[in-house]
Length: 198
Image (tube, rainbow, N blue to C red; front, side, top):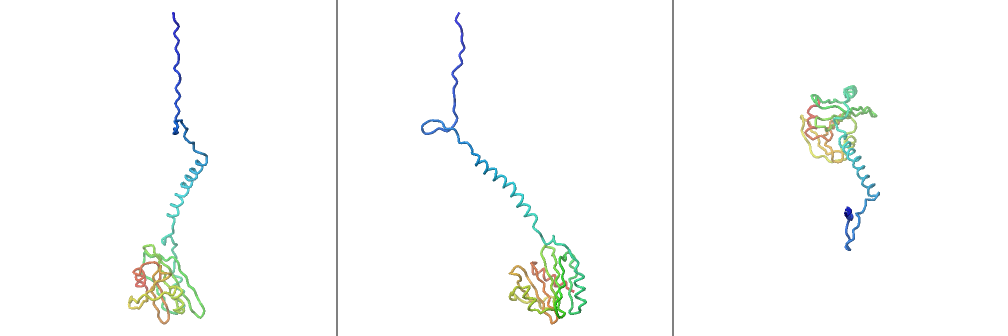
């Protein structure tokens, strides 16, 4: 009886890779450690920068973030001097006073400044002073030329572009007082402030 011998077939080897022009196979290049480091660095920067940019964009201060102050003491102090008729806005319930200052000077001169946040998150500052009008106006307007005159509530207000063209100003000059309404709010908003003054 003949022995039956199972013989395994010869193994076939398959090489996977790139073939050169000569027909030989070349294994694909492996990523180096430097490549992995650069890729990981780019991913880490993206993870850090995107939330940081979002946080900065969301945390920009607005006029509505300013604290509210009570300007009544500033107005009262100015009235006690009896140097001129002190004007105070009335009926602007949705405007918020955010800063108020009484600044005395030599010779009974003084200036009061009260800033307001408007309903559209802009600001208007009401300035009243018996100091020299030219000095006061130059300090606020930055030597801008008058842009026109408006009659508001029977008074002649001179219109200026103030603070390097970024703000509007309306100025009233009377013998004993200079009144300035200035801010980044629109001219219509400044006129609303003027009409409210009592």
